[in-house]
Length: 148
Image (cartoon, rainbow, N blue to C red):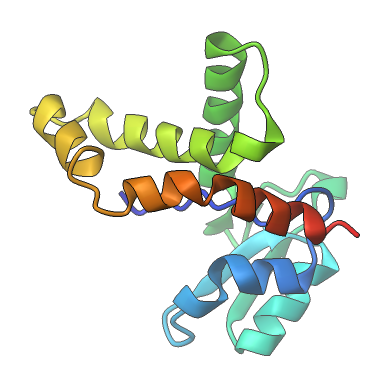
């Protein structure tokens, strides 16, 4: 799935947070950024030299020029929120990236005919799984250090 669920920061996002989260995966010739009108997205798009279409939530702008929108993002956010609200009694910030990884796997499995095989391929056969598990604390410390 092309779904990218990366915890960028806690609180209001900065240009540097966006850069750390997705900057190295941007193809400047093929990327169009649609976002809310926050200045961080504008600065990121300018630094990356990519086309940017901000939507102004304050005036309830949902679509711009009849094609640019962030409804996929809003829909994904709502599905994640409902899943967390219905499946858990809340989440720990420390494990937020793992919850997002779990949600992404659920999304990949939901329309697959051989869910068991895909699940094994994505989990048991993941050679980085133990490294990622052992790195949770360090990643969390890195995330909260950006809040100072």
